[in-house]
Length: 313
Image (tube, rainbow, N blue to C red; front, side):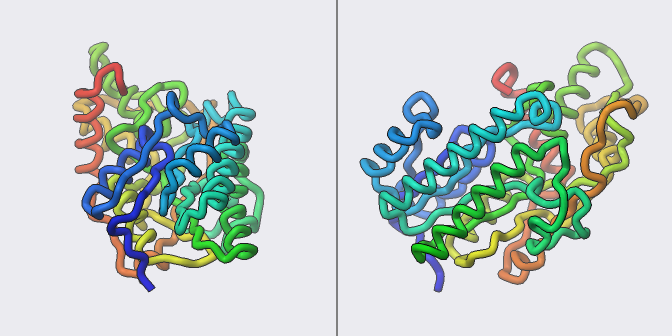
């Protein structure tokens, strides 16, 4: 039976992040009462404060998009932050939602939960069947714990808590800090900096051969709202584009978008990460959802946002 969002009080935890902001934008069309709380008003790492806020505001629905996120370098440099912060955020919100009588909760995981050498495309059943990619295992372990906590609450208490596993996301509102960014914003930033310096070439980490799947954040938000309304099951569900490409091809596409007409150089001393990471989207596709934003178009929009945002990016 479909879940009717109309008139519901929906709390988007992490509404200032890229994904949370996109979900909040998408929910405008659903006639909901949107609830948000910035980090200055509510620290989700504070259990007592989180419980009190949820009890006082009584949301019907919670979308848990708040998380400590970053790329390979950030994960490797700050393992405590990525493990501890994400564990306490998700446990505080999920447990607090249960205490507050929330009707439905959607937890956002990440494609990094899957084993480094998972079958391609990766089905949901691949979870916990092999070793994780070492460069982001701290974040992955925290996300696995979050989806298992939702599963446990569902099994023990019969609540409608679900988990979605987005693939690599990009779009307006992304983090373009060269030290902590994911691959697309990091490459956009590097390409734009090279262009501003009058350079033509672009250097990237690794060999450029690993293949990655990307999904525009607005497509992801649309899928998440679709799942809120149409999905209720114990197993997490993948959210992706169904297509991947080598990092070298992605870098060349970004160079074209930015207007950098030079050579692509590879730093093979830097780690590649997982060789390939393409998730199976068969279950979500069978439900009737499909993405609509082409990668090249999405990159152009993201680059325009980056230029307009300036220092805020």
